[in-house]
Length: 64
Image 1: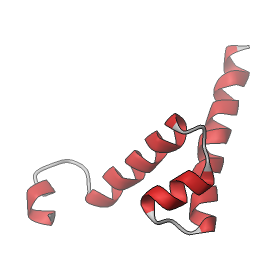
Image 2: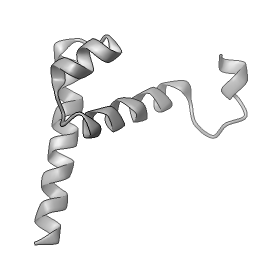
Image 3: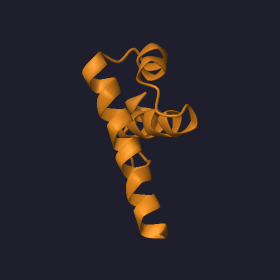
């Protein structure tokens, strides 16, 4: 896989992180859903959930 993405300006790990964040946004930041879908531990699932929740809160405070 590394050889396939080597020409791209992004790593496989970064692509996976981006996909998890997108899923967190789409699923309403449900840590159980993220954990199951991506085989994440509880702390990692909550970290992604918190990142999405904090980002949404910052966005809401800027638009008011």
